[in-house]
Image (cartoon, rainbow, N blue to C red):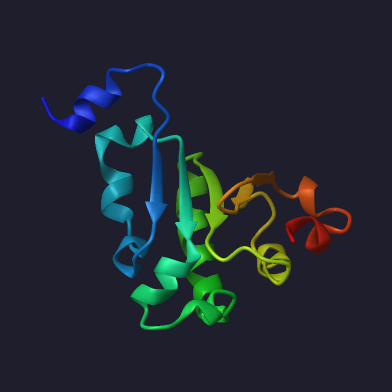
Length: 130
């Protein structure tokens, strides 16, 4: 029995797919797996994903990464997955989040806190992230 099979038998498990590398961005093969129905959510880690594109941390809010986030989220939401973003979240990230299609970001995370979206960005979001 594989580790995945053992985890699938545990009814208390929550499965999260993290997108940290550009190769993950074409994840149709993962979505085609029979076990995909056991996956609960997917998270894009923007700093590591940006690094896999040969860019540095300062590029996490660039249009190229936004395009990847949109593409992955559309595919994930087509499978009813909960969607999140992390990696370098700061006050400047709010504009990035707002460019995603409505309903395609359920929360964003810092190293310490998970913020529900869009509710947490309604008033003074940038101040709250700091």
